[in-house]
Every structure is written in structure tokens, then in C-alpha cells.
Length: 508
Image (cartoon, rainbow, N blue to C red):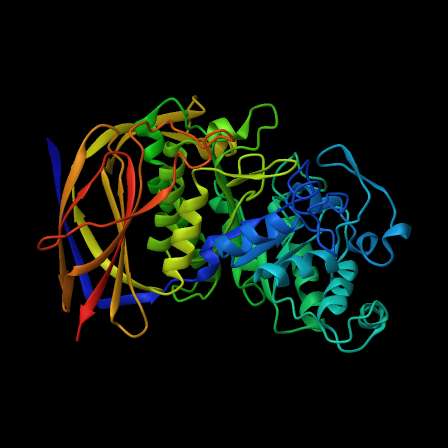
């Protein structure tokens, strides 16, 4: 027996362009996220610049559009000048975030070389913990300046032309007591104002991403209010399982996570509107760190990378696409090792289950990038949503004694996003059946244009066991398959706990 669902796609209602940067990634100086994996000069697999050639090919294959670097918690005590010049003379420094020594062999120029090799837009985050506005200003000049002391330092290293780094983050999670140099929002915003002015004096064309807080509308309001003339984005972070209230063993609760992130996006946007006093504010939201799981170095990341995790990853990307009029940047954290999409071994790479989600969604939505309005009529399941009040001041809890309270929310079994290409001759449909047990027969109607269903291309990620994982012994157990299916009158059968993508031509 199959569930029934109805989907309406409005082919003549393109709302906005979907930014390719929604499919970006994050890397940080931490454990083996960079050293020994992406950057491994001692490896026989390394290229002339010290990067693992097989990792480079993987990053190119997935089409990574943006890389955020160098942190993360690491950046709050990172001084960029330690990472330039002759590597033999670079100082060894202590990393207060991860309690480790860093030899600074991976630095600005190495990172920018990596971005060039894989075709990614670089996104640098400045140190607002122990760093100064002057230091950040010098970094912008080093990367983007034509003249001046720090532009000349770059030229002396053999790089005459500026690198042209467009995106810069103003610190990382400065609200958190785990962060070196953490502060309250007013102190952060005032300090960030000085940083922003100094950096834009060097290059007025750069786009600045301010530090926001996924659970802090008061914080985001103040940041938007004080920095509104200078910033283009406010960044928020989220790791659902491990740091948040979601429990991995509760399948239905986890399938609600994409809806929860959509809610956080909307709350952040509301804070921006209130803080700028402008409903048309052009400040966007950047989810520049996100993952289904927290960074856990004690557990085997390969075992966590189940089909269920991949389906949830696709759901979160759906959330960002649905909010793509608000969200322009997102960085999966991290892409390599820990809870990332690939696991780098000594002589091979394991593509985890979520890898194919990024590969296919990045590839296809880079072509069909105009978002189409749609609506879904589907059954769903009700569950208790936990509302966390632990971040609020006592007087803001409205006399509630408990740290959290619960309310009932609904999430649908079927989740869909649709888009159309610039030529308006191809439509892309991405489906999630979040039901763990039952197939779903979907009746799709596309209004305003004519569709040739007979020439539809179908791609699917599915396995009967939603806890299935890829392993070194079985590296292709969970993989996207291209299916030879016939779609009759827009009726599509979706397997349980599966992701399905349909490409269909528009008849002229």
C-alpha cells in the first residue's frame, strides 16, 4: 500500500534565483579536517603544492562552489601573518580552540590555491577574538590591494595581481563562552563596526558577513541595527544532533529538523527587518556552518553516515532552497572527515552516503537555478517540538520555571522543491519521502507550461535499510542511481525513506 500525495508546481511563477553558494562547505584547522587529509605534503598522493590529488578530484567532482576558512573556533586566536612566507620560517603556534600546536604550513596562499584548484569561491573569516581591526584591514590589503605595505608583501611572494577575495566573515560565534574573546552583543557589534569600516576602507567592494546566533533574535536584532550600512549577511550556525535538542534515535523528530531550520531562518530574517527598520533590507542570512551532527571525535563518523543522515541532509538543503530569497550562503561543516561527506583514509577516500546528495544537487541546481513556487498536499506526522529557553535571561522567560516547554507541530511525509533553468526549457523536481515505512504515489501537476513526461530523467538515493552506510568493504552500498522509468501523466512512485530527483523537458 502506498501513501497518496498531490503536488502543484507553478511553472510560470519563478520567485528568485537560487544561489549556488547554498551548496558550499567549511574547513577548519582542526584534527584531520585539513592536515593529513586535504593538505598532506608528506603523502605520496600529494601534488606539488602539498594537496592530496585524490581529495582535489573529489572536491572538483562534487562541484564545491564556496569554501569558508580558517574557522570556526580556530579563527578566534589565528593571526594570518603566521601563515605566509617561507614555510621553514613560519612559527609554530598554540591553537586554543582545539588545544593543539599548529605549524602554519597551511595558510592564506595555500587556501587560495586550493580554491583555484577546485573552482571554489574563497570566504575568509577574520579573528575577532585576539585580533584587531588593523590586522583584519592588513589581511584585506594582502589579498586584494594594489599598493601598500601588505600588498607589497604579497607581490614579494610572487603574486603581483590581487587575489580578489570578495567574502569576509566578521568573527565566529562570538556569543559563545567556548569562543576565545567571547563578548556580549553590544560589545561585539561596536567592535565589528570598527573592523568593518577598516576592511571596507581598503576595499569597498567586499561583502561582510556578521556573526549571528541561531537561537538569539535579540543578538541578531542588535547586530543588524548597528552594522546595517556595512554588512551583506548575518551568519547563523546549527548542528542538530549532539549540540541541539534532537535525538538521533527518534526518526520522526529528526525528519522535522529541516522545518525547524526554516523557522530559524525566518526568525533571523525578522530580526534583520526589525533591526534595520526596513522590510526591504538587502541583508541576507548565511548558514555558514551546519551539519546534521555535532563534531564528535570519539565516535566513528563513517558509522553515522547512514542513508537516514543523507535524507536529512537533503531535507536541510531543501530548507535552504525554499528560503533562497533570504539565504544566499550555506557551508556544510566540515566536508572532510569528522561528520563530513567524505572520509579520507591513508591511501583512499570513502564517499559517505550524503556525498551523492551534494554532488547531484549542486550539479543540477547550478543549471536549474530559478526557484518555482509549489504546494504539497500530503499526510504528515505530529510530534512534540522542544522549545529551548536556556539562552534567555531569567526575566525574558516570562516566569517559566522550566528551561524548555513543548508544543505539537506537524511535518509532512513529502517534501518538494522545484526550479527551472534560464532558457525555461527544463524543470527540476527534488522529492523527499520521509516516511520510514511506506512508499508514496505522487500526482504532480505543473501549471502554466507544457511538460514532456516521456523524456523525464530520474535519479534516486535509496536502500531498503535506512541505517545502511558505505564502508571500505562496501563503498557503493548507498549511491544515487539513474533510473529508467516511465512517468505516466505526472504520477511518480517514491520509495520509502528516499530522495528522488526528476529532470523534465518543457515543450515549446
